[in-house]
Image (tube, one colour):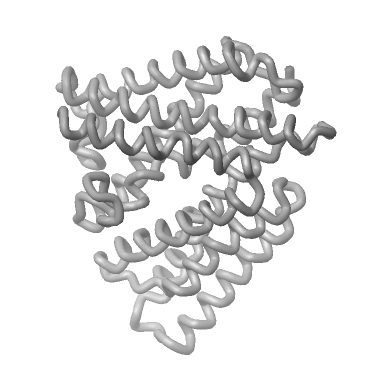
Amino acid sequence: MAGELTRRVAVSVVGIPLALLVAYLGSWVLGALLAALAALSAMELFRLAELRGTRPFTALGVAGAVFFVVVAAGSRSVAAAAAWLWGGTVVLLVAGATLAIWLRGGASAPLASVTVTAGGAVYAGGLLSFAIFLRHLPESSGSSSSAATAWQGTALLGLPLLVTWLGDTVAYFAGRRWGRKKLIPAVSPGKTWVGALAGLAAAVLAAAAYGSLVLDGLPTHRMGARSAALAGLVIGVAAQMGDLVESLFKREAGVKDSGRILPGHGGMLDRLDALFFSLPVAYWFVVAWEAVR
């Protein structure tokens, strides 16, 4: 456990300041990082599918994942990106189906090939794109200062990053120390009820503190301790669901880690699994809360 703690602290010491800097810069800087992460994640996901006999069109799927992120970086808002995102999804499906006709034929599970290709691109690139939408959300409120919107956007993006990271860390160590009863052993043998509840409690408390110290002072999209705690609960549940979904994929493929790109931490999917769900949920929570408060 001490070795795992050391690795997690080392990654956090390097990763958290870098993530905050990239988030503050936003736009194409954030987009470039997310595009690289989406491409690596898509490749790992397609490799998992291949281990079960499905043959996705990897080049097409990776290009699609990058496309979703590039569109988000260029448009910066869901409304502005919607037509491109829908169009890109249609092109992925049509291109995948066309490739299946000419390259695979009916005997090579074309339905699985096409759906995994398109679905993998949306999963790896489309969901990560919400980091960009959340970062640039204050711009839609008409703030005139670029420095002000950069700070506000970074603060908003920091909410799901903090909740996801802290919830995952507390869940891991609490589960290892006190966990006995398994959560869903058929999906993830290592996760326990104690770990899940402890992680969720940490997510709520961290969000409440973050709301009181940071979000409550924002000019737009303000959230105090209570509203941020609710956000932490919703985002924390989404993060754990994202973790379980990736575990389900690995379980089907029969592997422990999605890859080996990060020594001691597995693959890119293993590091980003919770964020795939927590980022879009955080975005829509902030949008909904601003609309009703």
